[in-house]
Amino acid sequence: MSRIHKAVLAVLLLASCLLAYDYVSSRQSRSFDYEGFVASLSTIYPDQNLVLDRFEEDVQLLPEEYIYFEAKDSTLDLISIYLGYYPFQGHSESMPHDPRVCYPNAGYDVTAGPDLVTFARDEGEGELHANRIVVEWRTDKRLVFYWRQERGELPLQPEQNLDSLEQTWSRFQSGRSDLVWVRVEFALEAMVDPIPVDWQGRISSTMQAVAAAML
Amino acid sequence: MSRVLTLGPLQLMLAANALLLLPYCALLVSLWLKSSKDAAASGLAFAGAVVFAWSARESLKARSPAHPMLGFAIFLVAVLLYVSAVAVDFRIVMGASAAAMITSQVYLSFGGAGVRTLSAPLFLFLLATPVPGFVLSEISRLLLDFSTEIMPPLLEPFVGSIQVEGYKLLFGEGFGRGIEIVEDCSGLGGILLFVPLAVILLQAHGRVSLVAGSIIVLLSPVFGYVGSLFRIFVTGLFTNTDSSILRSAVMHDILGIASLLLTGIFMLLACKVVGRKQ
Image (cartoon, rainbow over all chains, first blue to last red):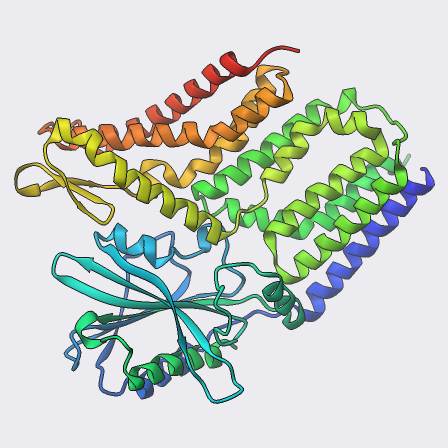
């Protein structure tokens, strides 16, 4: 065996040891505190009778862990909250569809957006970001906010769909790559532009509840 | 009498590579077991890489590389990237760096000629890399949007006026019939499958020039897309009939196979047109 091959072999074995050490020392199983999150929802949306609903069983594109709440007999015609949790970074078939695909699949047209909307926070705390679209099916019009949250963080970055270097570095530093997709949907007439301050606060509180529930 | 098993240098290198690539291979296997069409592309590419590498092993001859230090530097960078990517679960970098790692080792052991001999399996190994979900989602959205745009003018001469609702095309009396363009059923979801398939066909077909091969590989998703459009179009025609056979799930599956065959025919024709023996 030549010297260069011995060096290659040494590097391979050293790298394997490093990975084994990383696996044993830092890899933790992640979970999502559904109970805590659901409890937060009843505080954030106190006037809504949110009822847990289920999607069709065995839909391949859904994550293994998700929740979907829809308001019944509430003061608004409609509000629904979907949350899909991925313990590791969602890739390939485990990645949820962009709502711009889901809605047309159900017969809706995306008639506006996606626009980036920002929610102000206290001074020095930065802004929170979400995407907004309007979807229509016959006379049914809905306003949809959606965003991704990673590693228990708030959606501070507008480029949420990109594997940016900054995000990768953050993943490396925190040693975790769990991901949540959130979608909040309203009947359009309930939500005029600009977004009412109380609803801005509720959406921003939802983001904080998601971050808190990513254990 | 006992036999002592000893490992030669090549076996040692293979074992060390297998150990290091274990997390990546475990990830790939878990992906393939989920049986989606995107995962099928990765599985097909990996299987092709193994088969072609095995069949080429006889033609490999140990050679000194022209630039051993450059090869070793690339190898070191690839290992560093791979370890970091595994640590942060960055899968596309995991796949790309694993391919670079193997390629640099082939170069160090068998020289440039070895890399050329194994170019197809190495490329297939690269194609086994899991594609990020947001990329697939964006491709699928574009294809669904485009298909929904072009299908009504193609179908209207045969089924009459069409009402479009999202990705649903409604037609017939009172718009009571219709089809839904769904990525899984139309084949749009598996469009990337045709890239490794094209590489495998080209390798099996014989040596074609690099330019011709690249053209065919780049065009393969387009061929796959035309096959999908064919399936959507014929499904629309059949849905407008009163025949229960034409509207059955069996016919739906037969059309799936037909669209796959059509794509295969396009690829073979492309091999004939642009491919030439060297």
